[in-house]
Length: 224
Ligand code: DC
Image (tube, rainbow, N blue to C red; front, top):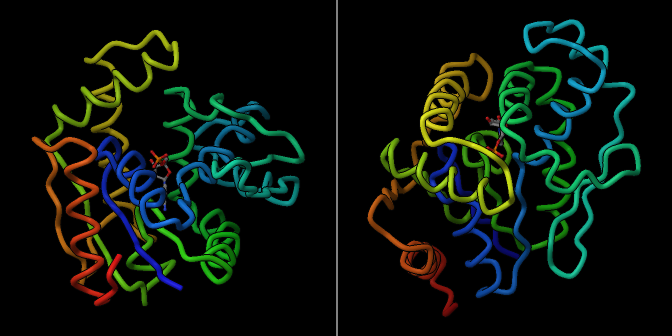
């Protein structure tokens, strides 16, 4: 069993790179942001504002989250329903960031994440994987890229899903979200002391995946 933790700000290419690495190593890719997005989606659907911490906490007993792997892809079920790309909307990104700062939400999602890593070899991406969720991960990477490169990638990704978004708005919301995520009191998005920093601004997904796999080989001695 192997555990690879990939943390970093939004749009750093964590998910594309982690998916490529998972496919090449034959391990499970876990997108933990999808869990926070799912909670954010539910909170918004109840008409609760992002600032209403008590309202957010009051939703938790009404939420059941299940993660399933279907044809190698992760699906998150909210009270039995697969929300698909609805959790990718920019409005839901802002809700996900807001709910993720609430300690009760982080505890609520802790076991779901650790259970998957206890049963499978994983490459897990998020903000606190190397620091909180899997502190003993075999390999920890803090992946980042310039703000502009990240906003450009995110804009193209959302447009490819058919969403009507503009680069300027994506850049502004991304900066706001990164600020919230890295300055919150609980589990801020910071590199673990033993994480390797990977700035992939000028790199393709394949080049970044090569860099991750080289690190896995180096750290674990596995001929992967
Ligand atoms: O990775 P993402 O953009 O899908 O994550 C959505 C939000 O969820 C992000 O703004 C911060 C939060 N998040 C978190 O706090 N911890 C994680 N491990 C993953 C995501």
